[in-house]
Length: 248
Image (cartoon, rainbow, N blue to C red):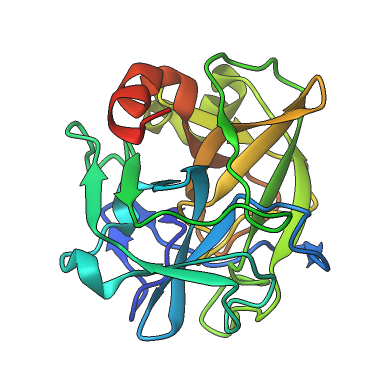
């Protein structure tokens, strides 16, 4: 069974997919400069999804994270402990990709508009990837998702990180079948996994020393098992849409 990696007030279940919260098998992030593009999306002070800064006024996220009352979401940047925001902004506009399907979790992209962040060592944008990367490429995932799957998994106060490896569509489909589309980038290394609360957060690749935002945490195995691939919405597949609506 698949899961969407989000945590709202309750765990969401979208047909064959379910939402999740944290990096299983990850490590504590100790400096805001480690992944300065990572943000926490919060409602009434509670973390429910992640996101990535792509400009001073726009955040890249997943469509399944979108809240019906946009202004109820606070974007927190510049912190490793989501309870202590470096900078906080109220969401002004939240645009989901028009082809997003909650049934198939395809086109799982969204862009949040906020008032401008002030860039510093702990708050920086990440460049959106406009190309695909080969299977076997190492990638970084970060977030405040659960450290273990199941109903007893807890959201950590401290941001977690873990490394994984990109896999091909064919390899991912060997596990998940036709659920895998050209808008999805799968990854797996059998030792860690995204989980509830990581939804919408970044999958990043270092390209010539420059970090590129390859994808946004979307879905994975029920229970956040590390033995099955997880999927991120692949930004290169809709790059022109992100350019137009994200101001990059």
